[in-house]
Image 1 (cartoon, rainbow, N blue to C red):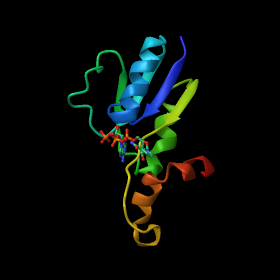
Image 2 (cartoon, protein in one colour; image 1 turned 30 degrees about the horizontal axis):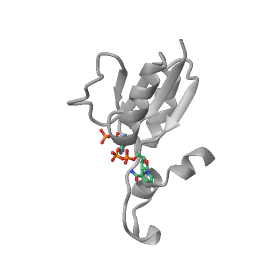
Image 3 (cartoon, protein in one colour; image 1 turned 90 degrees about the vertical axis):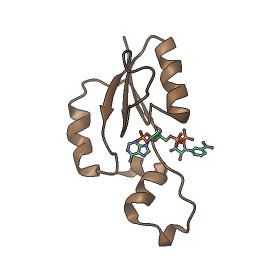
Image 4 (tube, protein in one colour; image 1 turned 180 degrees about the vertical axis):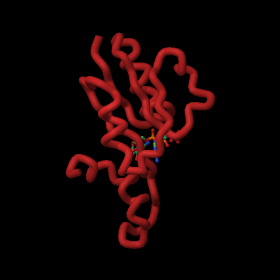
Length: 101
Ligand SMILES: NC(=O)c1ccc[n+]([C@@H]2O[C@H](COP(=O)([O-])OP(=O)(O)OC[C@H]3O[C@@H](n4cnc5c(N)ncnc54)[C@H](OP(=O)(O)O)[C@@H]3O)[C@@H](O)[C@H]2O)c1
């Protein structure tokens, strides 16, 4: 069985991805801050973690074992000028920079 890690797999687009990968018989691991009211809690390995805490991410990933597919989906949309936005918020809203770490 293949494993997919979906950040923000509990809501919105991430939830749709979670459903799709469960249908494909993947083991789904989801990371988000709050899994309350998450309908797939019995089928998904749910990890409550705030991904703005970047310092803990390497250890978290190391604890998960093999990941075949990563969907780096978690994020928020902040409608303000980039130069006026706090660095952590900008990090989360700009998914594109994570691959450069
Ligand atoms: N919907 C659009 O039209 C659109 C357009 C362009 C890009 N996007 C991007 O696509 C992604 C998903 O969008 P969406 O519409 O599905 O958004 P959404 O419904 O607001 O879902 C955001 C997801 O990210 C998680 N998340 C947010 N901040 C987090 C944090 N600090 N740590 C861990 N998890 C966090 C949320 O879970 P918790 O709140 O439980 O932590 C939730 O699962 C986002 O990155 C968004 O920027 C969306």
